[in-house]
Image (cartoon, helix red, strand yellow):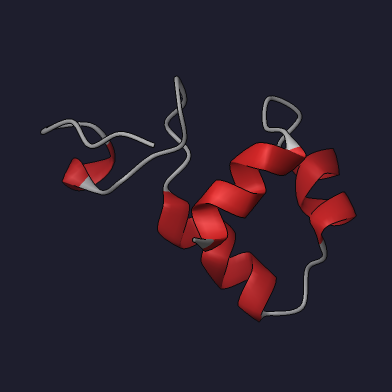
Length: 54
């Protein structure tokens, strides 16, 4: 994860992407499971999702 001023409003993003961590956490809280998240975010891995949850 990284935070860069001017990218995604300075929110933490997943490595080498513009996918905000809060977005993944929100989808998970709304009931989306890991498999669905990985299908929708093909550049992410299961390890990335675990790191986002941490």
